[in-house]
Length: 433
Image 1 (cartoon, rainbow, N blue to C red):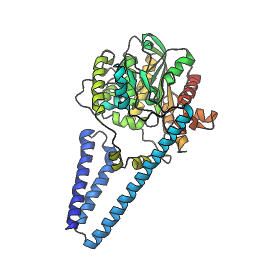
Image 2 (cartoon, rainbow, N blue to C red):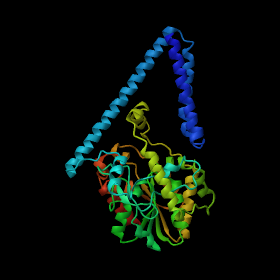
Image 3 (cartoon, rainbow, N blue to C red):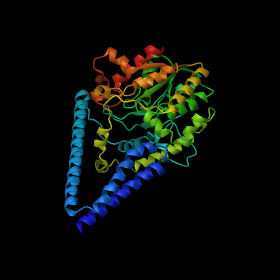
Image 4 (cartoon, rainbow, N blue to C red):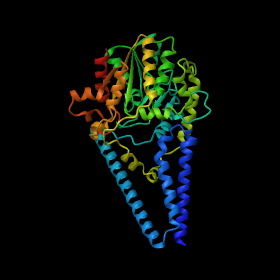
């Protein structure tokens, strides 16, 4: 009787997991990233097959398998518990280091606790809403490439002990609004969270430091979570189709996870239109009110969600994160669309009589965990093959400094600290000026 109940339960759970994978792969993502779910399919189908064999096994064999299965599950979750404990200790270490350095407590609140508190005294406050949030949302009239305009924006990152808060410009980016009043600017920057200025406040982000040391105008249209396709779309919408603006230098900031980001971006039909049609535009310069409205709606949706530690524990969040950290040099599978994006971006620069620079920001784990680089060779070969100026920030800093950990929060994994952003920007300016 127990054997039958356990066998039936195992089969039902396996089937539910299999159909959930189908839902995520074929409905939620419209089949556009099916290859990402290959291992999920293999795993769940294997579970179904194993569950079916339970019905025909002898009781003795079934008992052995059950004991083995339970022992394995206990061992896996014990290891997940250990990883969570180590993570907690690491957080405590960061908190103590921050207190020793600043005599202030590390901000352990979540972003919506801060949001609720700030809204009491400043109604002109919002939470960061990345363009990536809209990838899977259907029936949208537009696909926003920025956040809410002219508000004090809270970013969900406090790697350095405090949350990043900035006043967004008229288009929802992290710039002083007056930068857009200029007809001609020296630097136009596209990128992801590093361009957005993740983990630091102005004037310590790349754009702010570049304004300071160059004495020139700088506009960035970077946002956390951006990949190459959103970055290309931003370049088109806010520079190419902006007839009131001309840039002398375009800086394309690339980070090692951008290729993975491109895979998800290509699942959006509206974003793919930017590659299919050179004259395609959503006319976002004139639709900021719609962008603001969509972002505010998104904030309300996210506000009702809560970080669930138990859910992450069940899903083995820490263990999966550990297993998927690259440990060896592997060949990077670069989608053909990435080359197309770079070619078209270079063409925009040429039509704008602007210089075009590709700047490669390294993965912190190269220095924090002493991991090998897994993409520099292929990316550099592609970029230089297109006659685009390639700047490898990691190699440049490695030649000048022995300890590159000093440029990251508490010498741990993350975005740059204040000193890191400054050194990176100084090197960029030294080369591109």
